[in-house]
Image (cartoon, rainbow, N blue to C red; front, side, top):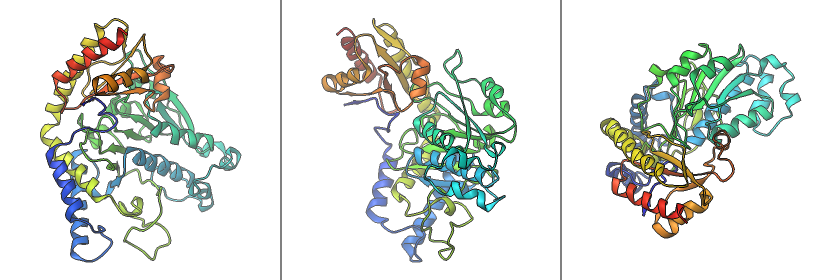
Length: 413
């Protein structure tokens, strides 16, 4: 099979990642930090080292502010709902409680009527900025919070270059704007947003929360230098980790409230979650093999990321140049280091086009809306969606040309 669905999950992993995951499964079957025996302590130490590697790789704020999750969706939910609960408690950044009674609705994950959520007055409801480029992992939590009266939301549209310019954030920011939540790279087109420029455009008090699912592992991310307060990472994509790996990294000025409650192995007599990180956000047993794979992926990328990004951008250029020459194909992507190339054919809806590639040419791509409905509306592709080919450093030019031949045959009907 020619695997061009790497934006969903990386198809191939470096051997070092595979080896460490296998070793973890074979000989590391204990619960890290939950017991005092030697193996449990060793695994906990290895997790600490993994946190340090990831904090260093992303220019983070220390190992204690690296929280392991099962994917980027969980990391985004932890950041977004953690921010919202802090806002309900009186402080969107630190979570220090201004009025304990104001936290009741935020602790309850069930929907509450807008009127109940706004009893304290409209001025207490924070304003949040996001964009049409977002995945549903951003849009659905934000829409839920908007629907239940916990935030006021502004969605920014695309500029002429197919991305959201920093000036749009500046124009939309208000006195009550508390956070900007946006993707670093679109999973539909591969267009990117520069977080450093967005940070400059926003008032200093606004938290910058970034979805790094498509960008992390493909481009350098330095949280401190770029002003990112929360970075949500998918370990199983560009980071080369296995399925079930993800992370949330956050700054010293953002202390998200817990999304999950349960055992941590620390402060077991405390009826609340521990007040310190990472324990405060890590209820339950961690996926040790997944965390180790992401650590190994980060170490691999420290040596290979720039070369790989240049190579992947070259592969996308082969696809974009070739697709432009096929009659009946409309292209929506430019060459990019994230490996994403999306298009549509006049003759066939995107899901059927993708199915033809799979059934007759053994090529894996994705058709449809890619969990990003607002981006497709902005592009004018909501009716029928797009075909997305997404490449990695393990793909070859030969595969790219084979894809183009197949696409041309299908487009001709």
